[in-house]
Length: 589
View 1: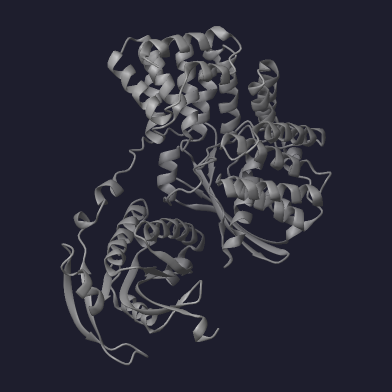
View 2 (view 1 turned 60 degrees about the horizontal axis):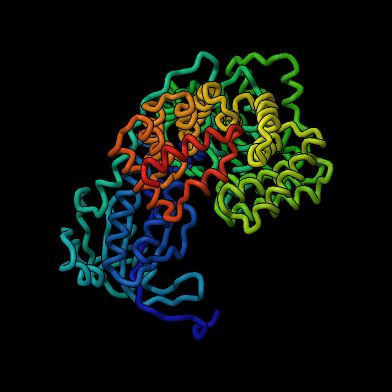
């Protein structure tokens, strides 16, 4: 790297460091990495919002670059407010704080990273800042002192190691009320504690990547999903989901708070460290009431033994929780291992990518499923992953050719089933494809088969409820729709829309309206929920609320047409869709 290849420019540099990072990692490495992952994502979003660029964010250190000093200072305040928001649900000794230093100066840029004395000065400023504090150089102070209502404390001239001249330093005094958007940041949903089920109950947190390579995140996510896949097959264990497709990343919570919010007696978490063909998995089971750890273990295995780890963890948990297995269940827990370690790698990376639901991740999942099938053509698992990736691409508007995607999903699901799939995922795919094709009895049969294999899967209950709605059996749809939400308290908005549709079909219009409010709080532009709100309010002759819902539909989908909508709804009895269309037209659509 020669100097003539570097770009020189004037930048405001923000250097941040996690306070007591070593202690946090020593106390609880898994919880610390989980919290830091959330912090990184939200801090990076704040940097981008204020026009900055993260140059480096490894371990406990971050370096960001901004075009001007004011944006860097505003962002630093936002970062502290964001951390305060994350920390509210964590015990005091588990909270994460940053020290931040900001300097304005000349830097060199090689196309990826920035270098120069100015970077070192920003790091030295960060080192003398108080926990949760911000120190700025005199150059930054002169740029921002008359442009904001912030208060500053003059710390005088400071001599820094390997910096030739002394630097005048100021500390920013930050009050919560002075932060832009602080009130909105701290407004959170009021959670109503859920009752404990009569059966043993468990939630599984995403296993964290304990290695230095962030590219292995998908692998740890895939392992989590594989453990979940084993747990959903145990009828005597109630598995409460902390995440669902589309809302994977959530702020960290204490074990007690998780138990209170989700209504679970136990919490499982862990971490994964990958080193070539070796993998180390750490897992622990905790009681939610007091946070007591009742089981923990570490598994060092070759990569091709990874499924055995899943089985061992499952057996340890059901023993620790005193879960009684029905006859034959133990045999179903023993998974057929992939023979090729590369297939395990691609399989886990595929599921980990798919769970994040961006278009790029869905495409990556499809690539990984193809690689899994190439390496293990006789295993049903790769085909199940591929079928779901094609189906999910359709639901997320990530497919350029919907007909082709549905055809491939159907073909791959059938292939997985013929190879004696044990996950139930291809049955879920087929249930939804049958429904789209208005093959209602086949759809219902496929959903029932999925529930036999996955009796604790919230998606299986939601799919069945949705099919029952379209089949004209709304009264039967209410209970599975409600149970899907119970199994997944952090549920996607369309779960509430399914329940609202079931209530509407039963003539329970007031209940349908209440549920649509919940759905619209999560997704104000959910057209299905808005349509149900309009129809239910119209049925009750609530003119003002009906008109408000109609206006919201027009904002969310300006080209909405009742007739076009009816053509896309696979009702078994056309009179069901005709009734909804009639009410919508009376409402003004």
